[in-house]
Amino acid sequence: MDKQIRRLGYALVALFLLLFVQVNYLQVFAADRIANNPANTTRLLIQAADIDRGNILARDGSTILAESVPTRGEFKYLRKYPEGPLYADVTGAYPLVGAPTNLEASYNDLLSGRATDLLPSTLVDQILGRPRKGATVVTTIDPNLQQVAAQEIDKARFGGAVVAMDPSTGEILAMASNPTYDPNELASHDIKSATASYNRLTKDPKHPLLSNANDQLYPPGSTFKLVTASAALEDGVDPNAAIWNNPGSSLPLPQTTHTLSNFGGEVCPGGSKVSLSDALTYSCNTIFGEVGLQLGPNKLADQAKAYGFDGHVPFNIGFSEGQFPDPGTLDPPQTAFSAIGQGSVLANPLQMALVGSAIANGGVEMRPQLVSEVRDSRGTLVQSFHPEAYGKPISSQTAGELTTMMESVVNHGTAQGLGIPGIQLAAKTGTAQHGTGGEPPHAWFVAFGPNPNPQIVVAVLVLDGGNLGSDATGAAVAGPVAQAVIEAALHG
Image (cartoon, rainbow, N blue to C red; front, top):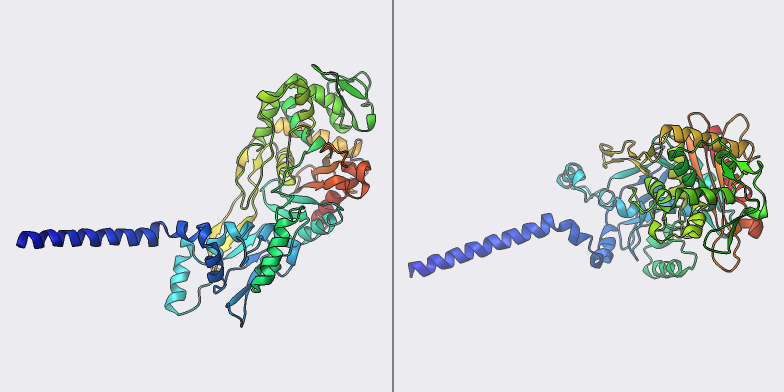
């Protein structure tokens, strides 16, 4: 009998230990995974409405992008976005219908007060009987620049986006997209109204919930010539040597009867032989097609990847890096078109801002940063973020040569007339064909200044020709947007 009792005791102890391990696993090790399971999203969002969720602030520490305010309704707190759509592509939304997005999603544990980093302040709140309060997230966004960028890109008839960043730190100073949305509609405690807004936004063919600045991808057109020129300079090409044949208004492509033409059927200036610098200054498709053919698809692909295309560039929210086709799939005609940012090459303003920033920063590409610090409910610093290099896609010599070439674009080339008095800018225009139905081109502009010692890089995309339709060019449509943002940054 004693032996049986002993066995029963052992079994009970084993079961108790098993139960103890299981409970601890669920409450400690698997807690975050279970809490963040998509099946629990709605329950968590409703539960979160009873938490004083932390603020999201601009870089000045006082401009509120998102906050929670007490209510007398069914839920204790309502998530509000004081500026409505202005910062939607940064903050995202914390809705009762659908999942949180952008900073509301990626910093959810901190904003909701559930992060282990906040354990000391959370324990104090519990001991004192105070409601749990989330941490405050301070962004790198400059409210003035965000306002200017949004106002300028809102003029784009069919949409577009602007990204402004500090090339020396990687801090994102402005990120605005058109179309956008009002996150207050999704955060409403009126479930019926919030659901209707969510359904309307998700079914909108313009996809306002996806940012044109960092989520969507488009052909970059001639702004990609910065990447092609980088590959050529890294390969030892002298930017000022007149070594490239000037075939006139179009370049016959090997293995086909097709040609690659300059914009508007123009002939690249400079005679029968031109330099890489002149080709960039006047954005000659024919010359850059030749450059791409000489370099070959592998060198183009390697240079694009060095800038972050087809890679994983760490960012505080979602980022669709640029795409360059598999070089093994490119025949010579496709290679020539890829060299001018057409074919299957894709990018967005954040990707092209990174390219411009690497050039402006002496060849070092900084990791893009949207958050500067996180503080708990008592103001104690919990996390801080410092400049971090993503890579070095080009040498300092190549960066200097490209900067000089881009200054020539502003002083003598396709961006002439878009400078700022007393300030030397460097820029590259872009006009990207897309589709097969004769749609107006996308207009691009990448610029930085003042030179030397650039303080800001701006990349602009205006979709479908903006207000100029088929007559659009990067300089005419996207250039003034970049000019306005840079001028606001440098002159206040």
